[in-house]
Image 1 (cartoon, rainbow, N blue to C red):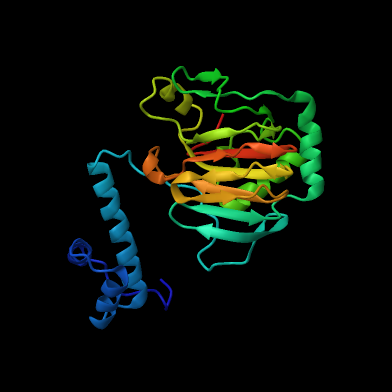
Image 2: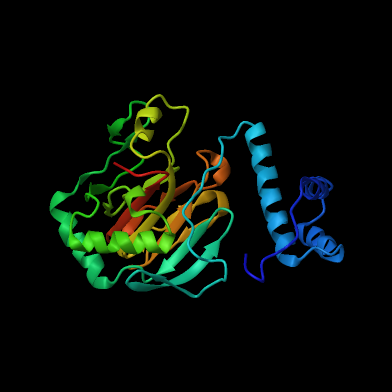
Length: 287
């Protein structure tokens, strides 16, 4: 143990007291100050408060019938950094929202990388399909009017480099990522609001989960800018992210339930073309 490590123990009695304060309606800042006034070291007080309230909220959520929460990818944003070093590239943090966790990154991809991905994908494009959770297979979905294709993970040196960058940026194992999907949205094309997790109530979901568990995060990277339209929208939180080439939007969802407020969609392209690359992240190794 280091000389600066906290020496006070977080007891069951302290946890119970914190829960009682929360149930009484006291704000976290008020509870933290009361703990300081009572002689608790600040580091111990913060740790006890955060962990206890998180566990309390999770117990209430499960008791209310929600699926249990799981660990999700999380960029290193504790110190509100302006930039993050993602393997071989410095990435700009343009905005970060906690609930739901939505982060907009600037300059994740270079212009040359965007062009190269479009060139590699173009000969292999076909009408986009979505996962069919009723059967565990794939299907054409009238809500998604794009063309697309999948790269195998690590298929080329370029793909391998980008995937390593994403793994470092989001602090999530590279092998837990699905293959990179490239999508093209022409004039009028859209993807109506939807969730990326697999609905546990659907009969095909158990077979889908065998390949790596639930999806827990999504990264959408913008490769080609439309002249008008094509933003990524989050209706539950009234947010729209502009499709700026080289930029990306990341969001995570710790349980397969609408309470995550990760409903999102691609607005119709009004003029020009929108190209994106999507990386879906699973709980476990995707095979």
